[in-house]
Structures are given as structure tokens and as C-alpha cells.
Image 1 (tube, each protein chain N blue to C red):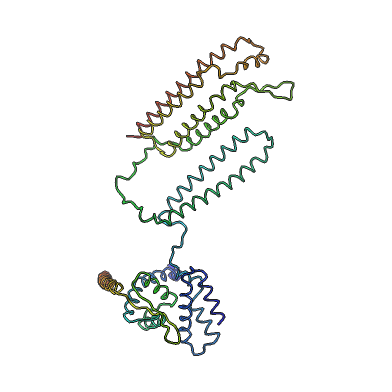
Image 2: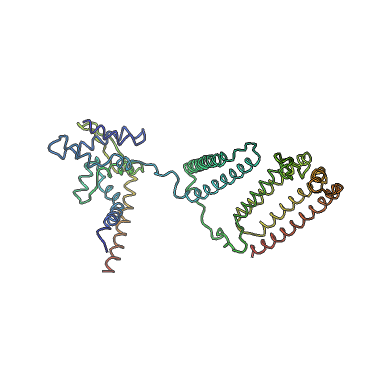
Length: 115
Length: 325
């Protein structure tokens, strides 16, 4: 069995696994306004490796879905776009968190019963 | 820096206008922030940052909000089915038209016709495909996709086709082709049904079986007959399998065709009275055969047609009963 040849398969499976939890991670950090790059740094420090090129479009999409609000900060030297979670976003976040906890409990049980 | 400008331009040019300005600002501030990680904000640092962001095409793709296909996955099956039907229809019609056209053309150049045929066929097929694609694209975008997904009901499941009541699609096409050719000839060039005599070696003269003027007066009948045959074969083609209802409709159409056909053949005047006389010199036979011939054909042919129709009708009925079990 050539496991080395299946690297792309493993990679894509890992990507899918991470992708599902990304929105939850992002929303969890937006109670206070953040701008794109600061969010990248925070997530990286928390152990979630996300590229700016992925995060920025995601933030746009979440704003379009009314989960976030944005505003340009033109006060400081560099104008920056700040994102913050909306009320609707908070409600959705509650649901996501609950589901996440239920899911992880279930899956952990599945895994442990097999070990 | 210039290279940053070029990069940003490369990303934004692929995206819709209303996004561009906002996106440009966002990208500039992002690149700036990423640069702040580097001590030396030199050309090399800039290049590293841009390479980290990845190819402009991929980045633009991540920002893109609309769907990335021409025909949606839900509609694709229908699209393929319609495409196949339309292309076959175009192929069939064009082929018949070319065949009929060649038969009637005065142009004796037999070599250019196949080339014209292939050229026209290619053009027509391409256009047909383009139109089908365009129409599906428009329908897709009107949002009919999700709204029209009807709940699946078990009663919607089609009955399993019974193979001995199957209609051969090939025979429909062949039947329709021959009928088309026949009716076209009767409409446009009934003189093709003739005896070809050669006199003095080189020249051919035609002795038509039919009286051309009388046949012309039946044009409407032939058009109607063609239409009936077309409807019948198309219905059979689409159904694919015999059912009682299909059989009933086919029989009704056959009866209609029979009536029309009989109205033609019952008229003794459709035959060319000169047919026998002009052929007589070839046979060295009895000229008085003319009248007998006219009335003989007028008697025999309708009866043959009626007999044929009855036999066909019975077999259709049997098929219909088989198919409805």
C-alpha cells in the first residue's frame, strides 16, 4: 500500500474537517471589533492556521449573510476595515456552539468505543 | 509599490465592478499588515508577502460569490437529454432535406453535394447545441432550479418497460424517413414515378404513371397525410413502449390516413391515360389495355391499402394489449 501517494487525499480530508469548524472559530473572536489581519494573528496564536486569503473572503461572506457588521476606521494612519459580530450573528453562534458540543460528544464516544 | 498595484489589479479585474474599490482597500491594508511582520520592508519582503497571498486568480476565486458553472448540476441531466433529442432531430431533418433536394436538383454535380451536406450539418448541429445551451442557461438563472423540485412520489415511478411491447425507435425514424421522401415526391415531383424510356440512344423521356395535373390538386391531402404520419411516428418514438392508449391513438390516426389515402386512390383520373399508349410501342402490346388498366388499378389498389391498414391495425392493437398487461 502506497500511503505516500495518498497525501493529496489525506490533505483534502483534513481540509474538509477544518473547514467545517472555521466559521465557529471566527465568530468566537468577533465579540469585539477586529480587523482582518489581527484576526489572523489571534487565530494563529490559538493554533488555528488560516491564511489571510481564506479569512478575508470568509469575513465578507459572513457580513453578506448578516452575521457580521463592518466599518472602516479612517481615524488612524492606516484605514482598516473592522468586523464585529451582529445580534443575529450572536444567535447563530449560540446554535453553532451547542451543535458543536453535541457533535464532539457523540463523535468522541464513537471513537472511544472503537479503540 | 508598482508590483503591489499590479497584483491588486490582477485580482480585482476578475471580479465585479461593485466589489473592486472596497476590495482594493482591503487588500492594500492586508498587504501592509503582512509587511509589518518584516523588519526590512524591501522589495524582497513585498515579493514574499505577495507570494504568500498566492496567485491572483485563486484569490479572486475565493472572493467570488456567484456560481462557477454554466449549467447547474440539477438541470444537467435534462440539458443532456434535450441536447440529444434536438441534435438527433436536426440531423434527421437535414439529412432528409438534403436527400430530397439532391433528388430534385437539376445540378448534375454529385460531388459537391456530400461536401455541402457535411458542411451544413456541422453548422446546423453547432447552432442547435448553442441554442439549447443558451436557453438552459437562461432558465437556470431565473431560479427555476430549487423552486421546481417537486416532491418525489412513489406513484410517479414509471411502469417497467415490457420488452415484447417495446417500440423500436430506429423503425420509427426509418418509417418517417421513407414516408417523408414519398410525400415530398408526390407533392413536388410526382413525375419521378415514371417509366423511363430511351429513344434514339441518348435521350430519356419520362412517362409518368400519374396524371400530373390531377395529382397536384391533391396536394392538401398529401400534406395532411404527411402530418398524420409525422404525428404518429413521433408519438411512437416518444412513448418507446406500447400501451392501450397509444395503440388507440395510432389506430385512429391510421383510420384517418386511410380515408385520405382512399380519397386519392378511388379517383380513376389520377392515372395517366397516356401511360399505356406511350409504353405500347415498347411492348408491342394491345393499346386497348388502357381502360382495363385504369379501372384495374382503381379497383385493386384501394383494397390492398385497406387490407394493409387492417392488418397493421390488428397488430397495433395486439401490441397495445401486450403493453398494458
